[in-house]
Structures are given as structure tokens and as C-alpha cells.
Length: 342
Image 1 (cartoon, rainbow, N blue to C red):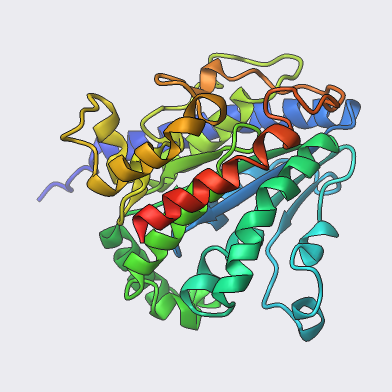
Image 2: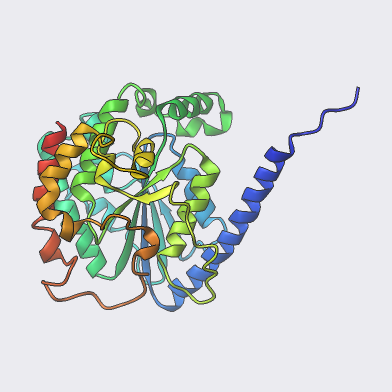
């Protein structure tokens, strides 16, 4: 009996992914050359559900970059000293200096996610964090750090599948933790915490971008494409820096719904009052007075955002997106939105 041939689609898919990834990694090398020559400071935050693919995404970014100017930071459990310090202090020491790109595999947003869900912090501590973080991040931007925040989201079924595979894979045993064991059990609690985090910490200066990560390869490629699209550098191949808007997209209030935020993406194609989740309609009403100054206009895409390049920080307190404009208004709107969801 003749041997059955392998399905060409799968083979071509793997080969196509590797070729596309290689082309994007060459662009990343060009970008790093510009980061070094221009003394830029780049900070990328990767958040997401357990088993969403943060490790693989980081590996695809840093694989061919200089380790001297590229760092991936994944902090462990806080020590007693960390617990008694200013909450942001343990991350501040890892912020990028000139010529560096730093990627946080989880970050200070632990407080709004796992710490809140697992009761590792009090509600008062979480509230204080949500109040402070927009101002803190605006300070980073004004100091010359370019901050990019991505949230990798997967479906409940995909999370169950990946966690099951993780327990069986002898090479991934280091990834297993007690928190993984209850991740699916607390799915709704994590969804609610994520929604509140988005509502309180998404600002024009430091926006959130959601990544549909059920397809790991598509997530890897499109996070890189999106990052490249937001930064200028010599020799840039603009044809490669075009992310799929169905994979990576700016957070919108319509995602304030329990469950997977990526599942709500299809509702944006033809939004109507009937297609808008009831909690989201209440949030939209609560945030209406602030929408025009704080949120992207309808139809806004990442390609229309001004490309970031080295520039002096804005000093005028009345400039759009400045700390004085956003930090005093957005927390109020965010608190009101979070109350609507509870």
C-alpha cells in the first residue's frame, strides 16, 4: 500500500509561518539598530489569560535580537520586602534605559488581575492601583519611554486544551502552577477583572490592544506587525508592518462583556443598539461625556495613529493626552464604568 502523503495545507502553513516570521524578525533587527542609534527606550507589556501564549510571543520577538539591548522580564512572587515597598518599585528597576527594548511577561497589572481574583490583595489596594496606574504610565511616556500594552485573549475551550497539554508535556512542567489549576474555574472572575482593568487604564497616551490568540502563529506574527507599524526606523518595509485588524485591535468599550473579549470583535462590523451587550450600553452612557476627548473616534485603526519617533516630551498641561488632561478625568469615567458592570 502506498504511503499516504501529508496534507500540503498543513506543511505549507508551517513553512509559510516560518517564512513570514523570518521576514518580520529581519525588520525587528532593523528596528533595534534604530533604537540603539537614536537612544530610544521601548517598553512592551504582555498581559493575558493563563496559557494565552505570552512566552511564545516573546520568544518570536527576541530570538534574533541583541541580548545586550533586549531584555525579557518575568518577575516571581513578591518578597516580604517587595510587599512592604511602593507597589511599582519592583518593576521600576527593570525599566528600559537608552538603547534598550524591554518586554514584561506580565507586569504591574498583576494587581488588577490575578492578585484581585485570587485575593492576594485587598479591594482597597486594587482600587489604589487603578487610580495610580494611568498617572504612572503617563510619567513613563513623558520621560521618553515608548509604552505598548497588549492583552492576549483566548477562548475558554482553548485555555482548557492548552492547560491539559501543558500538564502532559515534560518540557513544560516549569509552567505549571497552582494558579493554572483554578484558571478555568475562575474564568468569569478573570473576565470581570479584565473588563474593569481595561475601563480604568485604557487612555489615548497608553492604550490597550487586544490580541486574539487562539491561533498562536497568527498572534505571534500580528503582535510583531503591530509593534513595527507603531515605530519608525530606516529601511522599513511598510508592506510587512500591516497587522490583521481581526487579530490585533484597539480596545473598545464594546468588549466590556464577561467572557472572551476577542469574541466580541465581530460585533463591530455592524454595530447597533441590539447587538451591543446590555452592560456595555450602560458603560457607554456613563462614559459619554468623556468619549470625545479620551477615546479613539469610530473607525479608528492602528494605521491611523501617529507613528512614534523620538521627540521631546510635551510640557504644556493643556496639550491633548497630557497628564493634566487625562489623569483627572479618566479615573472618574472608569470608576463609573466599573460600577455599571458590577
